[in-house]
Image (cartoon, rainbow, N blue to C red; front, side):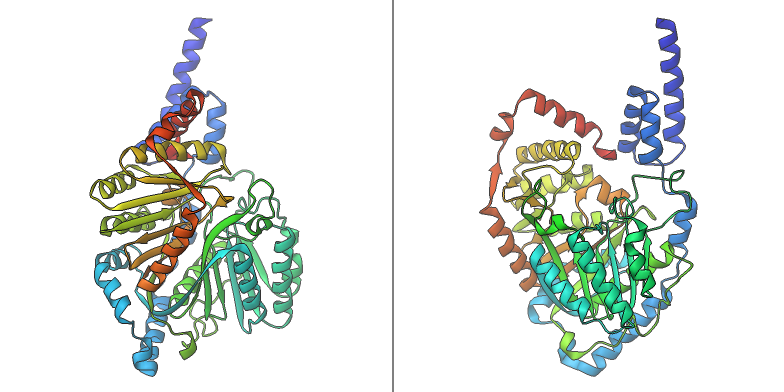
Length: 488
């Protein structure tokens, strides 16, 4: 019996090593998968088949083969024309210029890694409640005249989901071109038939990077976690909210939902449009969108001009640059006075962890706010582990107590900020398709800092002493979760 067990263990280990090493991945994820495959025979391989395989070359090719040169040339021509037409109106204010001087290296980083140009002259509205977000979104959708493009990780077929869909149907019937991209797993429970009225009205809806053989090629990883809305090429949204009743606080488990979203006008909308078009054409190549059509990239108008400089930055498994993570690290490095972070999931890799530790030990006021409750229990245990470790190095960790905190924000000093879909975890850094707005403007940074200070009043500070008072069983679960952090 013992010999039989040993043989099975050896065979299982050999197959585990072959399975893991046949695809390149970072060393932390490699060891985590070896642990799963060796300690959970058979079942571990089933888990790996859904969560461990890399994105297929066919799907990668569908995304990577798209040429962005024509779009970039179109955007640059429009921005040049706007500068010529509006002159001083489209130039940034003194405060925004000061922000750019501090962040010049960050701007250059994104230009090199993400081919992301600086978008000038934007107006930014910050939305922090589901009620404010959905009311503004519905108002803008109802006023659409030419095109509506929506992309969400979650588009549920619940009350608000039906309400948004019905507005889209009405606009499609009125001749507005409507496209919707949604993530199939993130929108689990939303059937294809939910979008049938939209298709019948002449609109389009498609799951992100859809596959013909879903059951055979199903993967838990590589989700479309982006949240993008572009209306008439003039109004854009990016941030943390999805489409669902829970984002309005209607879910008993979570109660109040605290999130952060941006409404943009100005040249930054062009870059949101660019990424939506790329995502759509990779997801539904049978119904491609013309990437340089004037209706998607209209000329800027004076009333949409503002004073905020920003860059729209994306990252995803189609390349290994981890652009948003690199941006987060550079933001932390640039901090001289403060670095305030909100994230529902705190599972940093070594480089991000070290950046936070160095900043805190250098006298920077580093604060991280996370929820007081889990939405994914195992992930939350890993978050608690890293929170306790960072607290040991002087990072101030807060548990938000007024419901569920889902915002993904960073505020650095008085000039720099980021808002988007990317969390501070391995999944957002390496596995998901994400999008963030990195902003260089004191007005925006100070407003986000004010929201942060308001949230602090509803949060409790966690100290090394409070973490030490945890029970042994809870601490054990946190350590186990930490071992599997690279694959959570």
